[in-house]
Image 1 (cartoon, helix red, strand yellow):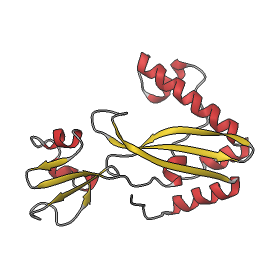
Image 2: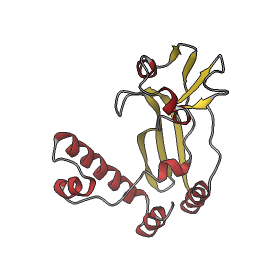
Image 3: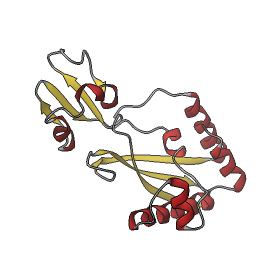
Length: 181
């Protein structure tokens, strides 16, 4: 598994992790289709703090961090690239999307393979939010969703996430978490 180069945001997240004395375990469990047709790298994430119950959740990474694409003839791509770097070259071409969705393989001279770059602490902390709309209608209005069964499922999941974060962190720590950007 590969790791990413750290940014200023990653440094802020690392400082937050150190200040709050939490540990974040990241376990790659495979590629899954949790969101849409294209499988992405899925991790089980556990946030632990000495005096609190741990919180475990599933995290699916971006498509760009889930695939590598190589043209063995070096006609289209001169080196290994992330999916997102060369998406414009291949997306929508006959057979490419199907090859990607089926888990990779060969598409003409292009090799597609799974990639699982371990997410940084910033990747994980930046996607959390302890503030949750009180009503489903407020949530739908805020995020431009229709009041549907799927929207309700998302809203309930966000409420669970919010409760878990409030259980692990103090109000001051949650405010500091929101400042990581």
